[in-house]
Image 1: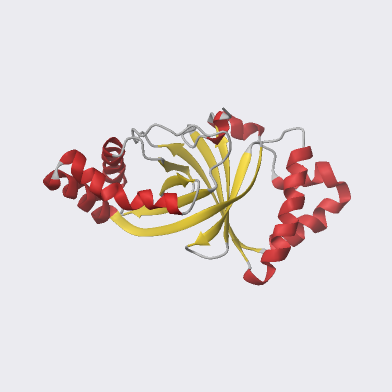
Image 2 (image 1 turned 90 degrees about the vertical axis):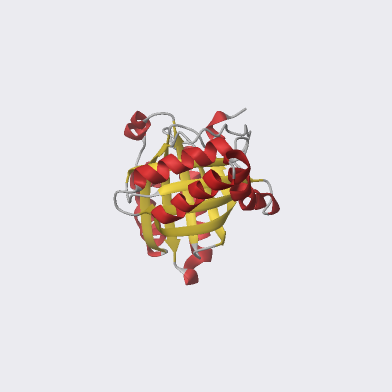
Length: 228
């Protein structure tokens, strides 16, 4: 088992790229060259990449599982990797790559103790259902507590949660699936919470989650590549 593909690593570097619609084809070509550079580089870091199938359009997500924060100290920057592999050709390549990107956000995430055991995988999951959750000011602690209650009630579900360690303050929840149809498991979460806690307490947990939220983005992501 390649444990690097388990989402419950203690930390994860999570990068979200908004790609210009008219340059998406060019972006994919340039991304292939960037991936090749990381494959050739001596300080290669494991990563996996996903693209949006449904949800906010034209986003690409790159995830680097981290066993500890110290791993980031050994992580080379993109321009360094390109320079070390492509030499003088790295500057125009990086400029073209950046021209394809409208916006880039980077998060360092730490695992939330949600009580959900991971599903062991040898490769990254083909699909992800991704929730980007923004809590009301001062309510993040309540939301994390409710997600832990959700985890206890849905033990065995392929759902994993991370909180922001560094970057825009969010909670990030992922459900893994081998097919898009498998992601329908998300629809059963409320029912399973009610079955576990009973109607009164179960609906209270669900209501508290909704009450703490300011904004929520939901996406279905498709796996597009990785570096092992």
